[in-house]
Length: 113
Image (tube, rainbow, N blue to C red):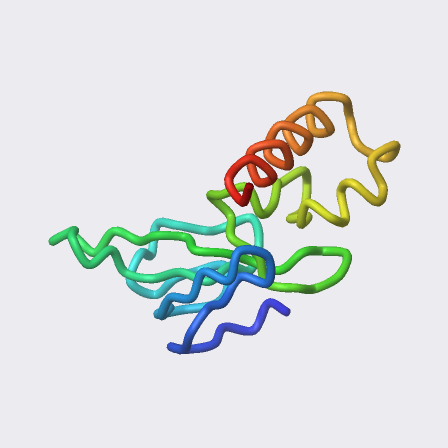
């Protein structure tokens, strides 16, 4: 999945955040000093005059679903994982990751009650 692709719309499979993106891949052309650790959906920061970027999301390395990177939808541990996949394989992750996912999952449940 390392092929770069242009503009489109990113939509998180968990929270359904929908936002335009300017680039998908590891090396955004508008930020040459940046190399991401994963293929990600990136947009130019509309409030930054110096072409900064916002990383919106990526794909879960297990189920391949698109997920947000900065919310309670996923965690990065050597690769990107959505919360359901982490919970399904919890015994394969370190305790710190399990605790992070449990706290995010609790926050999600409280937010939707």
